[in-house]
Length: 371
Image (cartoon, rainbow, N blue to C red; front, side, top):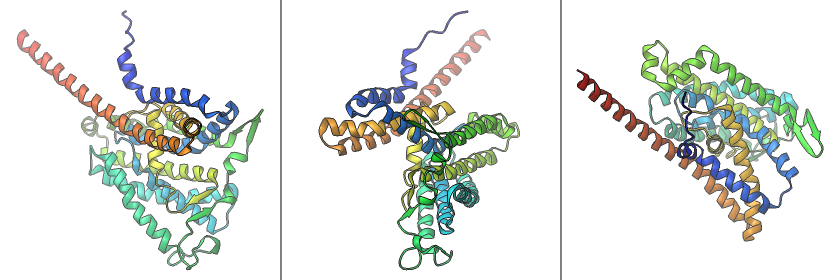
């Protein structure tokens, strides 16, 4: 049997984004001046804080719908759940569970609406989901700014605006702050490991692995590969696509609650704005594409992206004497990752389509000669 030769060009194309980040991080770590212990602690904390949100993107990608930028709908639902938890003065794990129970039904409704709309925009799901985020953001702002305290009763005056209705710009989540991080934490030397948070992430990983083996998971995979064939095989294509968005929205709701409890406060009107952007950047940095994503892509992406977020601003400050340079560079790289990944995906799609057309022509020509 002949061995396959290692294709350097293909390897570089498939891993270009990740390689750029690795080189950037290798250069920035010594320039930042941070100790290894500090970096490890920060990375462990950020994985626990952000991984859940990144995992919410896997199923829509598997179903052929690309990156679900509409996951911000789930983030909004999670924030509404936290507002109710703070209004009822619920603390600790109880407060987080209550927020999740409030946010999940809202996530199901919003996910179903979004999935139904995306079914009408086949081939343009990513840009449509991005615009949907802006549309529902307006509804969210109206609910939080005007309906809370006027239509929806607010019992806790500490979270209400002075005019009597509307929620304060910044919500203090001290009662649930870092509950998942400190409830069961193990220290190895000076390194802190939030075991409970990682158990939750591990459970999510097992759920995704199990879900892919179920009938619905297999249907999503089939729909993502070829919708026409799936429809002919009796798979309810539209329903399957909607369910992938619904599950993604629910996971985004839970992920936003996990993120905000780690931070300990919530910017009521803007906390969800960049949720989809950072999650998409992370999964793409990890080697995923808009048509294929794995659990390992999520972990690798969170580690690489947040390593850059940790060391690059300090490296920029130490080298140029201005921390803003590193901050601008961080934003530039984040948006650049998404743009570069989409460009590579588009180039690959066109190249594969051209190769297939040539193959069909060659097979047709050979058939005519044999006839």
